[in-house]
Amino acid sequence: MKSFGEYIRRVREKRDLPLRKVAAALDIDTSILSKIERNERVATKEMIPILAEILDRPEKEIEIEFIQSVIESNLGNLKYLKDGLKETLKIL
Amino acid sequence: MKSFGEYIRRVREKRDLPLRKVAAALDIDTSILSKIERNERVATKEMIPILAEILDRPEKEIEIEFIQSVIESNLGNLKYLKDGLKETLKIL
DNA sequence: TATTGTTTTGACAGAGTCATCAAAAATAGT
DNA sequence: ACTATTTTTGATGACTCTGTCAAAACAATA
Image (cartoon, rainbow over all chains, first blue to last red; front, side, top):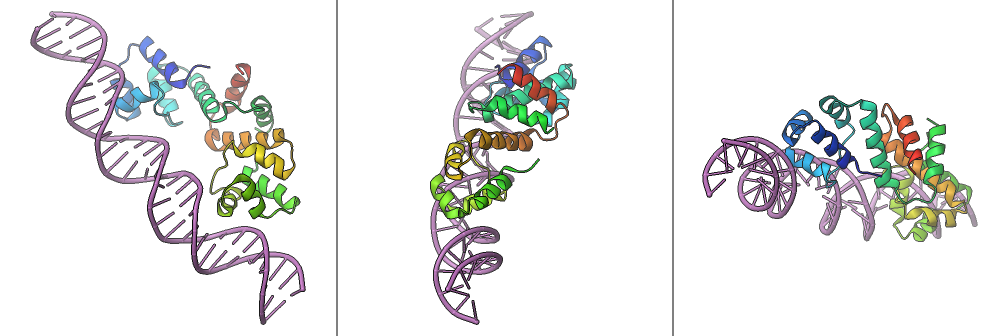
């Protein structure tokens, strides 16, 4: 499973956007975005629609990547993660 | 979706166990467990097997409740949560 | 090599979260 | 009502996390 940071960096570089531009759109310092891309900081959900816009990607795709990263980092090695996700799906 | 805290409290009371006993098993103060049950603090994954043992419930059940609560609190109102969970399931 | 633009690093401070502890409040049992 | 037990509350200090900032490192290009 690849990290959210790596994903963002890959897309940003494909778009030839400097950290500066994306960070400005997110209204954060470039250093923070740099850290997010290297997984030293975590992104917030509020960033998702903004990233979708500036990176020109479907919001759904970005959000899915975000969800995967949150699950990975918070619930990563649980024994019954699969069952837990299935059960969670049922009650949504 | 009911909270992890409420779930634990319900089971603990069904077993007629005081906070004191369960907290001792978890090696935490009763006040912390009290707060966890009222959702003022969050449980950690390390607590899951211990809770399973002392509350005499399958670890799987407890872990699923835990997973649901983490997803609810971290990803609760995302637009594409369902899709995100489905995609996450695929790569597990 | 010098210049310009980009990215990373680390120190810092503020906010939030944590466990600990003692005291207060609530509950049960006599 | 009294006592013992359980549960909740709030103050405290330690710790973690987050954003800001300036400086350093790195990259590209003239």
